[in-house]
Picture 1: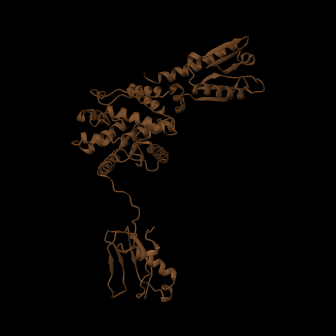
Picture 2 (picture 1 turned 135 degrees about the vertical axis):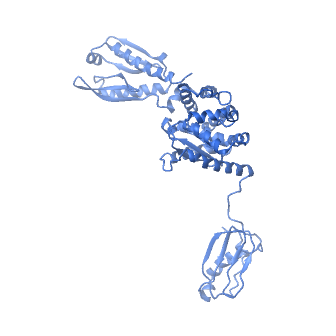
Length: 449
C-alpha cells in the first residue's frame, strides 16, 4: 500500500493520451521505475527506491475514457508513487525480509552446505506422513526459546537407528527409528526440544569453530554414522579432534537438556518426557557393546548421567516422577475383554498381555465384562497416580476378597467367581496382586539405574 497522501497527488498530464493500457508489476532490479512513452518519444526513467518496477504502456483508450475521474485518479496514484520524493510524504517501500546478520548468514551458509552433504548419506522421506506432526511440534516450542523467530524445518530420514540431528539454520533430521520408538507426542517434543536448544544456543557454530580444520563432509559423515548406528563411523567420531566432532560435548549436551526442559515447561507437553527419552537411550547404551577403544565418556555424557541429572531437575520442580512418567509412555497396557471358558462367556482383565483376573459372575447387575471394565479403569487410575508394589494388599473375608492399591479397591473377587474358578477367593486376589507386581517390577528394571 502506498503511503503518499492523496492530498499531494497531482493529476496526470494527459497530453499524450493516444493510448493507455496495462500495468505490469515485477520485482525491482534496483534501477528505478520506467515509464514507456509512445513510439518516437523519449522514455522517462525516475530513479527512486521502489520495491517494484512499474511499467505503464499506452494502449487504445479514448480521450473520454482517460478523462474520467476514476481513470485519472488511478493513474495519478501510480505516477505520484514513482516521483523522486517531491511529495510531503515519500512512498514507503513494501515490506521485505530483513537481511541476515553476518552471524546468521554464516550459520545459514554452513547449515545449507551441511544439509546437502548429510542428505547424500541419509535420504529424506519427502512424503512421510509424520512431517506435519514434526513441524507443528517444533514450531510450537520455538517461541519459548532464546531465538523465537527461527522457523524450524524437520525432515524424516531413512534409518532405523534411534536418533535426531540438528544442523545450523533450524534444520532438524529425525530417523524413522525414532518415530517408531517414541510412545507419545510428549516424547517426540522432548527430542525436538533438545535439538532446538542446540540451535537456539548456537552450539553447532561453536563446534564448527573448534573443528574448522576438518572437512565438512567428514563432519557430516560422522553425524550420519551416529544416526545410522554404523560402528566404524561412530568410532571415527571419537578419534577426530579428541571429540570435537563427536556430535556435541558434555557441556553442550547437558545445557541443551536443561534448556529443553525449560521450553517444555512453557508448552502443553509434559516435561517428564525428557527423562523417559533419556532413560530409553540409557537402556540402549547398556545393552549395546561399544567398539573397542571408544571412550567418549570424557567428552560426551552417557545417557544415564544425563537422565540422572534430568531426574534431579524434575524433583527440584516438585514433579511426581513415577506418576508423571506413566502419562507419557505406554509401559502399561491394560485391557478388559470377553473370554470363553468352560462353555461360558465371562471376562478378563489383562496387564501387558498377562491375565490379572477373570470376573465370572454378575454382581450388582453388572455383567462380568462390565466388572472387568470397571476394574480396568480403577487400575489405570492407580497406575497414573504412581501405584507402587508396597501399597498393594489383599483383604479377604469368608469366600470373598478385595485387592487394594493406594488404599483404593482395584478389584473384588466374589463367591460366584471363586465357585466358577474352583479356587478360594483370597488365592485369586493374591494371583492378581502378583500379576500387577510383576508389571511394576518390569517397569523398574527397564531403567538401567
